[in-house]
Image 1 (tube, rainbow, N blue to C red):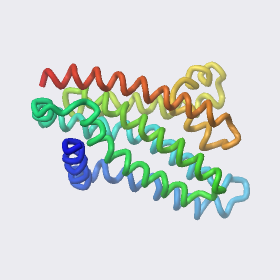
Image 2 (image 1 turned 180 degrees about the horizontal axis):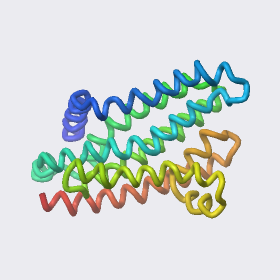
Image 3 (image 1 turned 90 degrees about the horizontal axis):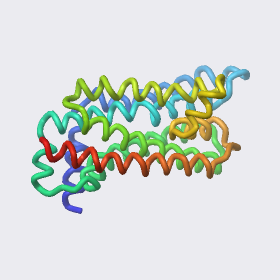
Length: 231
């Protein structure tokens, strides 16, 4: 518990020193707010929450993958992970420390998205639940990429196309049945389905997201042990 707390505090300090990462937690809800107030509310042909759900899905399903990968890769590049391994920090402790702060920040942003949107209480609860679990999945995926990357530049080069594929496949799925079937096994597709249609199969979507998280956690432990023992 002490290790988790120390890593959590370290990550919180590092976050506020890194404007490139910090801005991603600000720009997406800011764009959603501006576009909702200036465009959606004044145009009867545009759904009121269109920009909220769009920006929220991009934030949870794309932005956090690259941000987390960059943060973890920085620890690798600075050899911080080497000292953590030597200190006996376990994979779950490291993930809860570093990823826990990112998840907390992402959850706060999810709440802000929810407050900007015009949701009923039931819709808001569903929105926040699927958003926070989606954020968690992206954090774990980003952590895997970060740990397996040699440096921050490599992490960005790998995480960006991964984020683009996972982020844009749900949009393509709207027009292509084959892509829809393939994308359906990924958490980003299920996240997009729910935030855009609260009448969709919510239990199924949550099950797929949780299964994605379970698989990603398994690979994170493997990646941590593999790379952690080599640094």
